[in-house]
Image 1 (cartoon, rainbow, N blue to C red):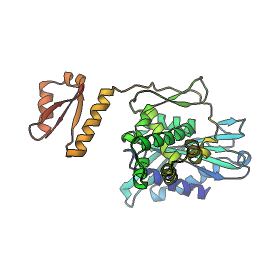
Image 2: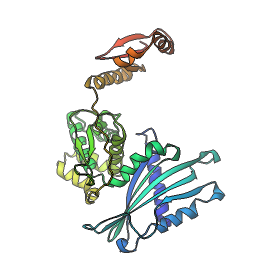
Image 3: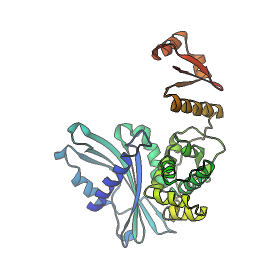
Image 4: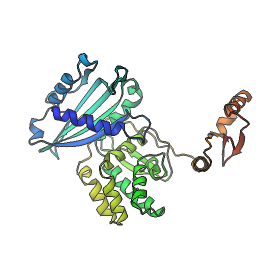
Length: 340
């Protein structure tokens, strides 16, 4: 499993270098390893022992196992002959060249051992943010599937490229770079998706809602599922879009391996209600982004409710921050400040 350990470091580095999300430590990644008789012979103990020997106190590093290990799986999918093992642990390790780069990371790693392979999902966050991020990452580990999100991402890439007449290789690659980011117009579809569980204890699925929703825990799961499913396939997708390949063929090419996995049943799922955003808020936000791109002016947007709660002192302080006399611009149901 030493080779497996090195593989994880490489995969984690890919996630940390992503510029799409602000918290670069809050990531997940998936991979598969060929291993004959894995469903019979595999246990996570080799992985655990490898990490125990790798993260030792002599280097300022440490490994703390919270749960997992041993031959007994957490759950079994009898229909597929797959055994699932979950390991939760905390690693303190140096992520740079100086001693002050030591970070403490909290992980959940899920192994799915089948007849001839082990599929692995690795989820991580900073340990001091685990109370905030852990629940989201645990949902990712439990769901262990990104098939629907992958197919939806391909569908959205097709729609967006056609509606915006994007056809050159460079422009298509730029579009795909932003396809999984809710902050980009091409990635805004992510905020339309809601993770649902039709039957208690059953598998999870995603449903597309009519309006945009606020991007919270479930939206974050979808963004990372999108990133994971498209990683390494960006150029292939751009090429197929440029050649106007049939929709079905594109989805099969990009998502086939991911979609071969059966969705597991999830116990104790706590749903996050889908909360739609006010279309006027989105419209005003787009207008502000356009003005910033054209003028370089940075603005802050406030809702009417927020302005009504402000005192005269709040308004004066806000104006002083603008280092001048700000003009007050009233949008459609929204107000924002900026210097012109």
